[in-house]
Image: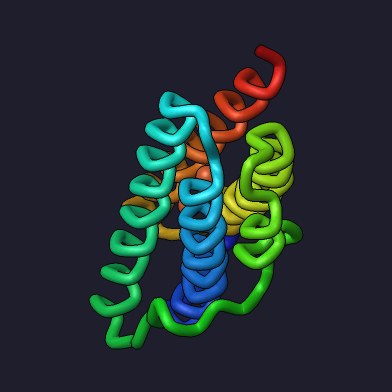
Length: 147
Ligand SMILES: [Fe+2]
Ligand SMILES: [Fe+2]
């Protein structure tokens, strides 16, 4: 059985996760602006909303433990296909979806590793729900690419 993390470890790890989610939100914004197909756009808007919810859920955990979560202004450029790269792809839905697949591979692997860490049960539940969202995002984007 994995040892439980202490509060400062929990805050530090969630801090990293939130930064990744903010980076994903920025990439989603660029993708939503650049993509043509209306049904693709609607799905991306929905998925961006999931990432925004993740940010608010995990920020809430950090605050409850007396920490300060990262804020939206500070993008760390963690993702391979960040917002600037995606903004260059305007007009090519395929390129944008491919880039977003790469980003979702990254968010999926981050959440996959987070659920192995030994977080307390309520946080673990949020992480597992978040991982399920990320898997759904990746699966939908991949299937849209294969249409
Ligand atoms: Fe997320
Ligand atoms: Fe995602």
